[in-house]
Each structure stands twice: as structure tokens, then as C-alpha cells.
Image (cartoon, rainbow, N blue to C red; front, side, top):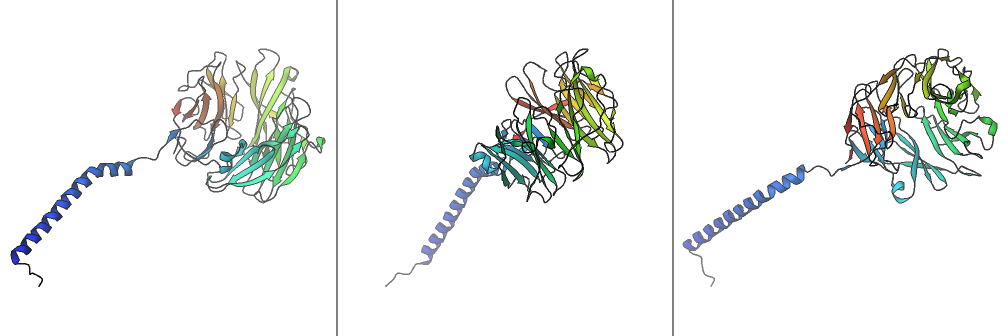
Length: 409
């Protein structure tokens, strides 16, 4: 017969059970107290970041932008300002010897990258801030070698142009191909190819050609010209045919042996500015920065005053915000950083001696680029003698700068 438990045996068993529960609870509390800081720290620990060096920057606004590293094999995007980035490099770059040759970023979500992989030109595009990329391949070549992407330019979501360049048959020359899309890149039409039709466009020196479009039909092309004339051609059919613009030579043209145009930039369909850098063989033989303005849509151009340089590297980088606002950046005759600035479309020029940058060293430093988002806010990146890229920002039009420390999350 199974024995019956007495009342006192039950009481002892219940007490033991309660004691076990209390002991277990105490142990749990001790373990919890021990683990709580670790759990809290784990939850509060920030995402791992590492410092990056940017050698190219396009800011859409104060928070959104795109950037490259020096090798142009890593692409970054930000929605937190120029100090916090995420790597959005397409997977193709990580598995191949592909590298960027040009890019165009119209807004925070859309981006276009021209890349070269062996003999193939590849256009990569994104519509979601770099989370995914679509590719289109081109196989353009000349007897001397392959073309590479030289410029990407989209006027809106549907109308865009791709410019390709290849080394020409003799030093300083180049071959140009220009393609156009009217359906957002689904198909591309070849407008000109100077290999097949050399007379389709007079090419500027080297590979300095740059296309600008104000409408789907109206566009201009600028570049380096080794004379007192200014290289400026325009199209009225979207880029199929080009004609030389009627633009007067720079004053003292007999001593001018180099010109390079930037723009034109338009206030409206009639009023625009073409900025021009030129060198002279007379006087101190230094560079000058001037501008032509038009009030009739480019039929005639009026030359404005020049801002002269005091050293050969004074006009190294440029940023032209619109038809009125522009800057140059370089080293002056004393080896110090200097900016030339206009807010009048080249009718007048100011010279700015900036503060807050690195100690200037014209013999070792490399001026990587200059870009302004507004008349007050801009960025410049400088490589120091230790081969490190340094990024600086200004909030007062280039007078004062402060260093940034960009990191990738």
C-alpha cells in the first residue's frame, strides 16, 4: 500500500519549494544585474564606422550628396550631411577591374556613373539612392583604342546625353562620340562620331570638350583652344549638327595663346554667361579669368573685365553656381591659397584670402576640387604631402573654412 504523507511532511515540502523559488529568483536577479550593463551597452553601441578620404563630392543640398574615393572605385551617398556616408558601390566594382571615368547626380535618388572595364564602356544608373544599380553596355572603339565616358548630362528624367572620347591620331587630338536618349535611357541614338564623320564637329585641344544643354534642342560645347579665339559651338537640333558661335576674340588676342571656356550658364533663355580662362605670352605671362555675357540667347557675346593671376596655379579649380556666381581656387604668387569670386557674372571680381585651410604648400599639395551649393556654402578637398585627402567646408562664401572628418557607417 502506498504510504500517505502526513501534514508535517507536506509543510516541510512546501517550505522547501518556497525556498527553492526564492533562491532561484535571487540567482536570476544576480545574473540580471551582472548582464544588464552588457545588454545596455550592446543596445547603445553605435554602428561601426571608419574614416574615409573623399576625392570627389557632389552635394544636392545640406544633407544629401554623393562622393568618390581617390581611386574612383568606391561610391558613397549621404542623407546626413558631408561627414556621414554609406558605401553604395555597385557590386560589379568589387568583383572586376572597373573604375569610374565620369558621373552625373541630378538629385538625391538618381545617379549615373560612366565606367570603363577593359574595352567595354558601361553606364550604371540608380533610382533609389544607390541601393540598386542598372547597367547598360556600349562597345565603341577607334583604330587607336577604345572610347571612354567623358561626360554624362541629363536635362530631365527623359532627355540625356553621353559623350565619349578617345585619343586621336596625333598628340593633343581626340575623337568624340555623342549619344542621346529621349526615353530615360531605354534606347540611345548616336548623334555624331568624329571617326566616321570628322567634319561633324571641330574638336578642341586634347580631351577638354564639354557639352551643355539648356533645352532638348539647344546646346553648346566648350573646350581648350590654342589661340586668341574662344572655342564655342552651338546646336539647335539636340546635338546632330554644330555651328561656330560669333564670339569676339579676347582683347589683345595676338598675345593670347590658350583659352578654355566654362558654361554657358543661363539666367533665362536670353541672358547667360560664358566664363573663360586664358593665358597670355605678354606682360607677366600669367592666366586670367574673364566672362562673356549675352542678352539675346547667344547671338552676340559681350566681353567683361578680367581678374589676373599672380602665379601659374592660381586658377586650378572652378565652381560656377549660375550665370552670376562663380569661384576659382589655387595658389597665388606667394604660395598661399587664394580664391577669385564674382557675383555679377564677371562684371567685377573679388579676391579672397581664405582662413582655416591647411598651411599652404604649393610644392606638395594637390588641389582636388571645389564645389559650391549656395553663394555661402561650399567644399574643397586638398591632398597633403602625406598623400591624405582633407575635406573643408565654408559657410560664408569662401572666406573661412573648417575641416570635416567624413566617415562611412
